[in-house]
Image (cartoon, rainbow, N blue to C red; front, side, top):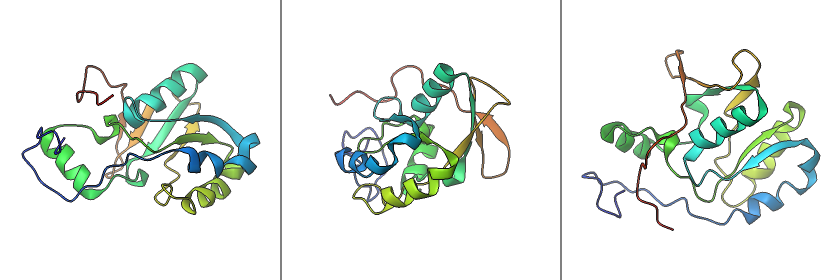
Length: 156
C-alpha cells in the first residue's frame, strides 16, 4: 500500500514476497501428517481458511494473537479500516496438520528461511462447520468472512 502511495502512513515494513520452495522442502519428512497446504497469496489468510472449511465441512477457531502480523502492519490496517487477514501473504504457507505432528512441523518451518515466524494459530472444530471463528485479544469470537471485492489492485 505504501509503495503504491495508497497509504498516507509510513513505516519500516518489509515485503513478504519470497519463494515457498524452502518451506515446502522442510515438510518432506512430514507429508503423511499434512491434510491441507495452501498459499495465501490471493485473499490472504481469510480466503484460505474459509475455502478449507467450506470444502471440508469442518469449522476452525483461530487465536488472533497467535497470527504473526507485524505491529506496524496491524496499526496501518486498523487506521485504514482493512482486516490484515484479508491481505495477500506472498512467500508464506498455511497448513492444516495432524495435532500430533504440529509441533515438529512448526519447528521445521522455524528453522527454514521465510518460516522463522511460523505459528500454530488455531484448531479445527466440529461446533460450527463451514465457519472460521477468530478469538480476539479480548476473548470474544467473531466470524472471519471470505474477503469480497478487490482489497488492493493486483500486482500480477
